[in-house]
Structure formats: C-alpha cells, structure tokens
Image (cartoon, rainbow, N blue to C red; front, side):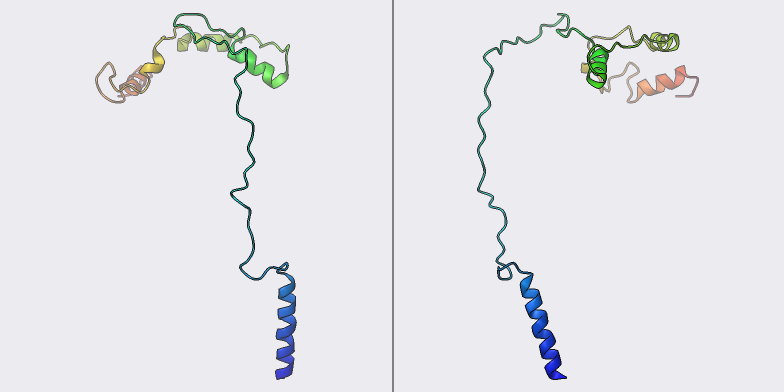
Length: 132
C-alpha cells in the first residue's frame, strides 16, 4: 500500500511539473513596465489659424446641430423632417424661441426671485395647480 501511494505521489508530481512551462514556482516573468514604445510628438498643423469667437458674432457652423446629427447617423444629403404642428405648439408653449443669453452662467444659482432654495420647482408646481 505504501509503494502505491508513493507511486501516485510521484506521478502527480511529474504531472504537475509539466504544467509549469519550464519555470520554477514563483519565477514567472510578467510584462516589462519599462519597455514603453515612444510615439511621435503632436504637431500643430501649419494651417492652424483659428481665432476665438467674439461675443455676439453668429456661430461659425453652417448647419445646425440636428442637421449634423442626421448626417452623422444617416449619411450626407439627408434632410431633417419638418416639425409637426403638435411639436411646434409644444415648443412655442415651452418658450423655446425666447432663449435667455446668459442662462448658462445662472444655472444652479440659488438666488431665486423668491429668495429660497428650490423656488423654481415651487413656482412650477404652482403653475401646474399644485401646492408649493
């Protein structure tokens, strides 16, 4: 019985040593973190003559964002479908044509007209017929 267990241990040791790939236990080499390939530096194109936009000037883009999105999704030459009467009425009621120019600088400002935090939500609830 003892010889059989020694033979099984020997066979198991030989079988496990074949899985090591020739390296001893704990001597595996990982990737070399210092072997970094260098890429070419970024180059500014010679035609880089962009000027920053001036306040009040019209936008430099020729197409609006919706047209650009449609062309990116469906290819050039696609036209934006006209707005339905319901969509047009919704935009008019929401005041989409009356855009406040400095809204991005005022978003998140807690100095609401009524002087309390969350006043905008309360006023929206009052308009809808709810309680503040």
